[in-house]
Length: 450
Image (cartoon, helix red, strand yellow):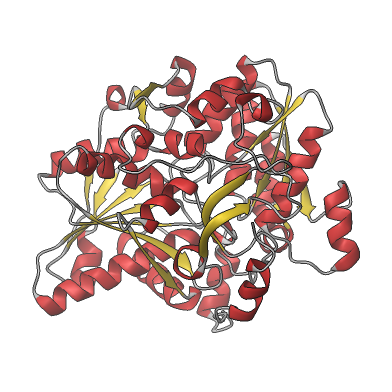
């Protein structure tokens, strides 16, 4: 019987600082713009939305930013997360490749999302904020922030994309159990939500719509800040604990990855694992093949346009230079709800635009096929989002088999799929379908972008 090999770090190996890729970027990042004036944002512009500590992290240039003690103590509940050599998957694929995965599913939310939720809740509490409004797609981010709010005594309001609200009732119940208030988006609770429903009563929602509602909610209350689970610099910064740990763990394994893979919707778990490795490259180290994997139903990196666009549907959020499908594009209701975003992290977009990383887009049926194979060999049912990374990791391993190359593959398993079993039921019963790339709808949405 082939066993798995787990590479575990001691608790004292939890990183003491987040890695800030802005210190090492070979090309400067374009500044975000005010949604009203289209002038570069100032810290004062962002103060109604975020605590000043996070605003300063958004524009920071130092390479390391210290992790506060209370945040690091909360991390210790589930960090360091394991790095696992997937021997059984390798055997099933009959590949000479060595496959490793960094498993982020042991947190309270079952994903990587608490890495930033805990930090954001801490900084808001420190600034005297009582309440946080946010959006969530698949519900992993909402779950993470709901628990982080419980840790630091904050009220949390979650606008959950309608398609996921209907598909994933247990995610909603999880958030409510932690104490959050959850509403399906678009909702009747905000002006932007009511406007969308007036025009599209059966709207499945989108992350862009939910962001609009959460930002509008925030702007109407003095006791509330907004919290985002992906895309922004400070969010990806907090996720770099993943990559920093993986560097130490790969050293324990006595190998170095040739290929690094993660799914990408807004870019948080991708940046989390990839940025520390990229930093080594930018400082004169080895170059790695780094692949961001996205759904063909929302292929911002592979089919979108690199330009300034709004981060939300109602044009309330900052305008960022990124790969985008257009801020009013509504993706099909695929089961990887966390990847149904029209745009991409500006930092990830910059790296893709200049060729430092590559991107691939895949359909959901072959992703679930790879996810089921992974579950049957490695024993973990992956989140639908994570199956995108697994799909490309399997493809790379099969390519190594064909070429005879002994390749080392590292991918981020961003979360488990135990609240997504209805999507697996649809796959196993043959009811799951792929959605064609909506070229006409994307062209229409891009005509309104910027």
